[in-house]
Image (tube, rainbow, N blue to C red; front, side, top):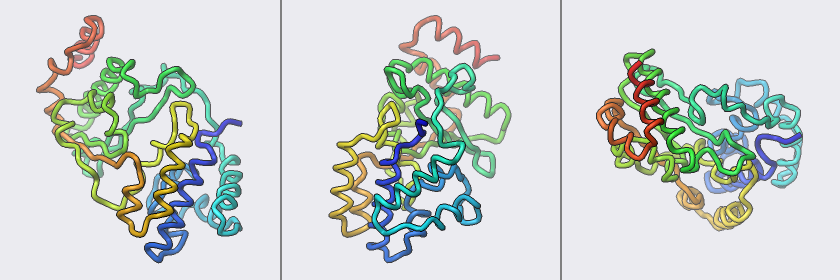
Length: 266
């Protein structure tokens, strides 16, 4: 069975959590919960904190030594028993917004965008400039449909390491790039997948350099600096998508332009 996430992906988070324990003088449970994305990626739990979830309790109840490889092996074996762990090729025709998904803020005024590589196993990842026009159409279709269904929506935001990728940022109005800033918080959720390549395998050189920096870190700030790409947060008014529409269309093939204009006006 091929899993969505490789074993090493969890190993680096466990080593990171153990270092956080030493620096912050907190429990391993707390470090895993607050400084990694294991609850979501290993257990598929989106609720925070996850401590009421059955899977979370079962994971933490697994007996292991304090050796990272031992913890990782036992947790990975548990992960493979979960139905959501198996990787299956995506049928792109069934994905309404391509690589994009979203959540709404509780007050329904802001769209929080998410994006992931849905082309695993192909020659190019979803973030490749090769799919620029297609991705742009998916993004604007999402914005149009969600804002139409939720008339209170005023802003579009995205908080992730993927904001470091030029081909991703170029999908947005220019105001979005101008708004980007490093997220100044201790949230370590939208940062770990930078260690995976387009085929879902660990980037070994990146992992090795990261773990060296983690090992030498003496503070939480140094741990943050160990990440190759930082979490950047960007956000713009939804009107920016409408005002800059013709600029956004520049560079597209005529057929794509006509299709996109039609979709946005129907």
